[in-house]
Structure formats: C-alpha cells, structure tokens
Amino acid sequence: MRKPVIIANWKMNKSINESISYAKRFKKLVKKNKNIDIIICPSFLSIEPLYTKLKKTQIKIGAQNIFHEKKGAFTGEISPLMLKHCSYVILGHSERRAYFNETNPLINKKIKFALESNLKPVLCIGETLKEKKQKKTKSVLRKQLTECLKSINKNQIKKIVIAYEPIWAISKGNPSHKSDNPADAEEIHLFIRNELKKKYKKLSDKIRIIYGGSVNKNNMDDFMVFDNIDGALVGGASLNPTSFSNIVNLI
Ligand code: PGA
Figure 1: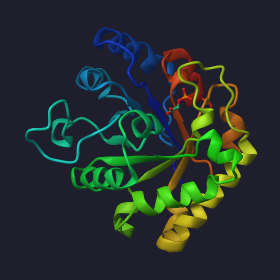
Figure 2: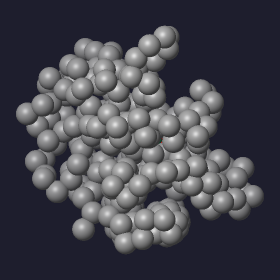
Figure 3: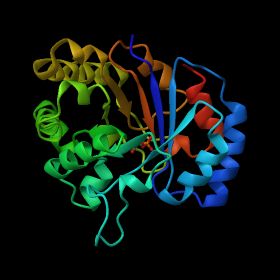
Figure 4: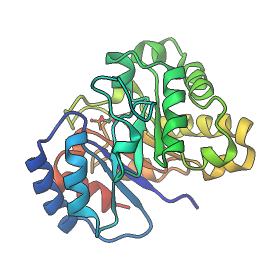
C-alpha cells in the first residue's frame, strides 16, 4: 500500500571523491527494485557529482538541510533553488535541533518552503532518553507533529515522510549501537499515524512513517515486518556501500 523508502543520511562525512567512489560501487551492489524509493543525502558539495553518477538509476538524491528563503544575505546558508537535483530534504533532525537550535516553528517554515520549492520533506521527530524515562515520549511527539506541521494541508502532507528517530537510539556513527526494540517502535509509529489521522483523516494511511536510529542489515528485517514501519533513515550503516546495499536489498 505504502511504497517503502530507505534514506541514507551521510551527515558530515565523505569528500567529493569518496562520494563518487561510493556511488560507483553502490549502484552495482543494489538490486533494481521499482517497489522501493532509495535516497542518498550527502553533503551539499557531493550532491551534483552524485546526481551525475546516479541519474540513470532509481537512486535519488536528497539534502540534509535548507534555508527558508530564496536568496539574499544569509551567510553560510543554502537555498532550495540551489538544489535542483534533489528530490527530498531532511528537516528537523535531532542534531540540527541540538547543535543549531532549530525549533519546531523554524522547522515548520522550512517544511513549507521545501514544498513550495518542489522538495519532499523528511520530517524527523523523536524524544531524548530523559523524556523517555519521564514517560513523555508521546507528548513530545504530539507537540513536534502539531508545531512542525502547522497549516500543512492535505495536498502537502502527502509529500511528507515522517521519520521517527528516538534520539537515544541514534548511533553517532557507530553502527553497532543499540536501536529501539522494533515492537516498541511499531507502537510509536501507530501512535504517530493516529495523531496524523486526527488532522488528515483517511489520508493518514498514505503517509510514510520511517524509523531511524542504529538501523543496520541485521535489524532492518525486524523493523520492516511491522505494518506501520515504512522504511528507514540510516546514518552510520549507510556510510559503507556494501552495508547500505545489504539494507536496501532486504526489501
Ligand atoms: P544512525 O543515524 O543510523 O547512525 O543511528 C540515524 C540518523 O541520525 O538519521
């Protein structure tokens, strides 16, 4: 019913040359499969060369961030207009929230601007370990969804992928870090879908909700058996073409 989507989040890793070598290897390793969306989000510098290497394949390119203006005096920022070859953009990642003070209202602005610019947003939400221990997971997620999706209409929500990434499960580059228990993740995904249902009614069944946090080839299958887990956002384990192709080829 929903097309699975697997997204590589390279974070601040790989030079242009390293990205090109990866693309050459990855496209040979990954099986052709029309029933899945595969997206790689490299650094801004590697977007163009990766696009050139992968444009004849099914693999799409995404960005890891954008600024919410077309152009102007915004030192160090990147406008969606400069990202012609990207189809998706990751927004609201917990690292951007933590290190760059991105707030839900700012993420909401970026989502709207991404959509206007023909980029499909991948909205990341998730709780900290402290919030989990305090049993605040659901209230934190509800607030993130409400504020990040403020005035997003039914036509727009169809283009958004929601990534549930419990912050305590993110590997920080170490692919053997412990992920969430897949059954617990499914419970949260169902909660997210029910929250979306309140606003978007039946359409909520069409919205893809993916899991992120220490996904690797050994645990991917355990997540994908669940009805409300529609794919994965993969950090550490996406940095190696073999390990990422192993994940993608499981679908
Ligand atoms: P991880 O990262 O797979 O290395 O845990 C996921 C993410 O932060 O998007």
